[in-house]
Length: 233
Image (cartoon, rainbow, N blue to C red; front, side):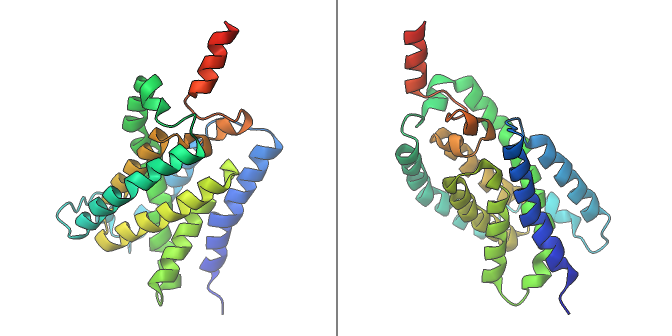
């Protein structure tokens, strides 16, 4: 008999994101999605804390002395360059414009993004996902990573662009692997935050920001946009 958690998994990590994306598009919503993320992660946290089988230490464990930390650091050093190059290729007008033209916003993003976006995502797409649905993939670690990558990618379907889905799928697999290896949500969140900040720095924010979909802009004005504004004045 099919485990009912398969149904839960499909509804929570596929149907729900698609429904939200449809509704946002249908009603032309371009506001912040963070409150919905906070509510969902809050519910997931309550469910985890009420589960006697849940190991609460994974929420606070840092694991900086874990051998896998070296893998995380080396992987970032290897992938940082290609990620910057991807931003230069996909969004040349926005490449490095956020720190150059809006350094205050960039610093605020670097400080607040990990807390208000990365940590809630860590609860939903790593801690809750693994605790409640990891047993469905107990026989295959690669399938578990694939499922986690797809779930994380689908969580960004509201942005309605292929680069966001591809980038987040790759990130989802990496961050889940870090969590699996270290059992540290904070370490996986630190990795997630580092890549996220670098992606926004590289100009990829236009693919990961809902408000930009209706204007064709990123969170930071591009050089072309500002030049046009100056001419208009």
